[in-house]
Length: 440
Image 1 (tube, helix red, strand yellow):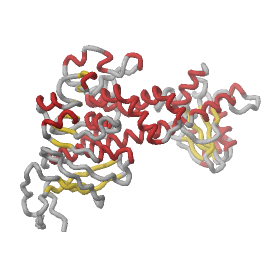
Image 2 (cartoon, rainbow, N blue to C red):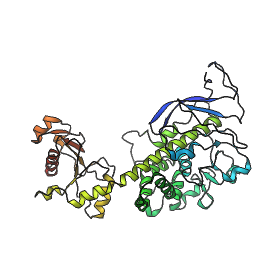
Image 3 (cartoon, rainbow, N blue to C red):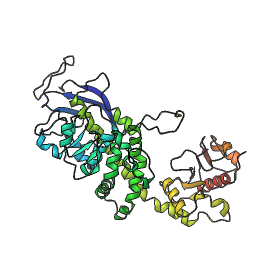
C-alpha cells in the first residue's frame, strides 16, 4: 500500500497543460509502513530523500550527494518531455552541500520561487558546462560567494564572474545592463532569465539546433531566432518579474492569467500547506522542467517556421493572380499551402519595399475550398489593415452568399479578420470584393 501523503496535494500542470494531474509528494523513511491517512506526517531528518510520484510515472532512484541536505532527487522524464531535458531532470536541488563542492554548483535563493530563476537555470541546464551541476537554494551570502554560478540572488550583476541578480539598485545605472541591448530595440529591464538569455542565449539555441538536427543553413538565422525567442517568450517573464505593466495607462480590458510566470507561481504550495525546504526544492525542480520544456517547444516552432519563409517569398515574387485586375490582386497574397506567414510577411514587405501593400491573404483549406485572412497592422495585432466588410460579419452560409452574390460562402468572423468559401475561386471572389468595398 502507498504511504500516506505527508506534505502536500497540489495541482501541477507540466508542459503548459499537456500533462496535468494530482501530484502527491510523500516524505517517508525507507522503512515507513504507515497506512493510516489520519496519522500525522512522519518526522524525517534532513538527510532523508523525498519520494515523488506523478500519477503512474516512475521516478528514477538517485544517491545522495555528499553532505546534501533536503535532497530533491533526479527523476525520469515524463512521456511528453524532451530528451534534451534529461540533464535538468537528473539535477539535484538542495539547500546545503559539502563546501568543497560549491565551486561546481549553481546557486539561487530559497523560499518561494519565481519563473525567472526557474527558467534561467533551466536554460543553463541545456549547456554542457552546467548540465551536471547541482542547484543550491539558499539566502546564505557565504554560500553565494563560494558557488560558481549565482542566479537571482546575491545583489550582483557581473557576467565575468557568473553573477546574475537584478534586484540591486545600481542595476538601473546602465541601459545595456538592464535590457537586451540598445541595438536590439528592446527596452524591458531584464530579470535573471533575461540576463542568462542575453549572455548565453545564442549558445543555447545553437546547442538545441544541433541536437534537433536542424539544417546548417539555419545557423545563419541565429541572430534572428535569438531576438524572436526573446520577444515571444523571455521578455514577458522579465516584465512580470520586474513589475512592468504590459499596457500603458488605464486598466487592461481583461486579465491575462495563464502566462508562464503564473504557471510557475502556481507550483508553489498554497498558503495553508507545508512549505519547508524539501517541498520547495522538489517543486522548484518541476518549475525548472516546466520552463525548460516550454522554451524548447518555442525554439522548435521557430526553427520549423523558418521553412515557411520561402513559401511567403515565393507568393510575393510570383505576384499573385494575373487576370487584368492587378490593382485589386496586388493587395491579395495567395499562398500555395497553409503555413506560418505573419512575421515573414512583415519582414519581406520591408525587404521588397512594399510595406502595407497586402490587405488580405488567401490559402487553400485542403478540401478544395479557400480561407481568407485579413493582414494585421502589426505582428500579432488584432487590428486589421482592412477588415472584411462590416455587413458580412457574423453571417454564414446561404445568408452570406445572398448578400455577396457569391456562391459557396461559409462564414465571415464577427471581428472581420477571417472568412471562408467552399471553393478557392469563391474565396478569391470574396477577397476581391472586400478589397473594393468602402465602409460607410
